[in-house]
Length: 416
Ligand code: PMP
Image 1 (cartoon, rainbow, N blue to C red):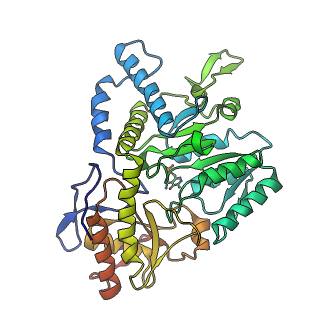
Image 2 (image 1 turned 90 degrees about the vertical axis):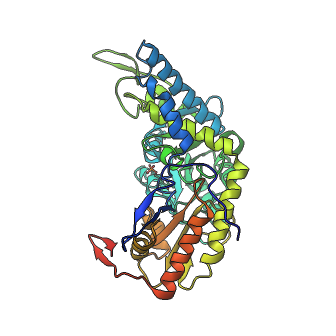
Image 3 (image 1 turned 60 degrees about the vertical axis):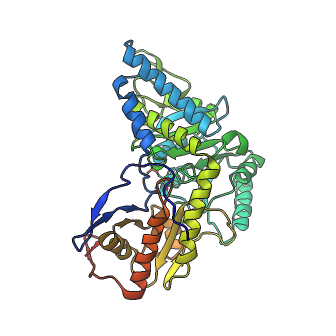
């Protein structure tokens, strides 16, 4: 197979990490789904705007004016990137979890929520807290959609909350069909885009998605920023997410008149650098182009799957037998070893970073029978064929010869 490199530069691309035998190797980061490395283009943009570091909206000085313009321009960039409708709000948040909790606080009373049991806890617990009907996914995606259809009908739901791509298997849901399904029952569709937006262009107006959330740190921006984009009416009728400065029009000792629009939910000094970083990431990903990005990830994914599936003891995870679309996230187990041990071995003996455990999706992990946890390999624009090849040869050595070192469970982690 031809070797190929990353699409663009990312932070940590040349990081050398120590191995257990004293050697060091280039770090192979195959844990993009947890937090993707920052793009070089994003970091350069942060350097460019740092001289204008100043508070937004309230300052009269030049740097404040530039900072405010940057912040509002970032909002428009994010809205354009996800195909927001003209009257949608784009609210900056800390991350996906924050955005979903904000949205949960804006669902009108008497609007039942429906979701699936395959979700990351961030897209499950806020709805569970509202008494949502949680539908158990079956092995057939078609049947799962039928079950959602019936449940929306039966509950008179106001909101269907669903992930765009599974953080355990990478499987992608048919969002335009889900939007249709929800709308047919008079419900809205909220999509957890944490694992989808970094891999695929999402277009709210074209697909009919009503709300989309995602995290900047999974979209090649540094930690600390995310977004909620969607219909204004619920958000403008809801109590402010954070009561305080900036979220108000007028305050007297007796009464507060809350702001409309995005300001209502952005109380306190916002994360201007974070918002600008998300916008810079959106611009850089848009510049790569959706086709190019998909092709790169498809090549990485097929390279991985074509050999992984053939390795003795390796079992690939999937939620659905009839789901044909997936992003650069692959879950699997190795029969003879706990996932934690495999992850420790990959790091200590090969300098490869993956994720192990139940991936904040306990109901799904239980249903897939992952009592010893599972492994997750994930990649993106900074990954190349060498990362995948190193992983495959390390796994092959493991199943054929076992680890070179002995691993013990210390404080719930395996260590050599
Ligand atoms: N949803 C999905 C599908 C995720 O993968 C994650 C992150 N693991 C989250 C939500 C939560 O994202 P964050 O931790 O950035 O809030």
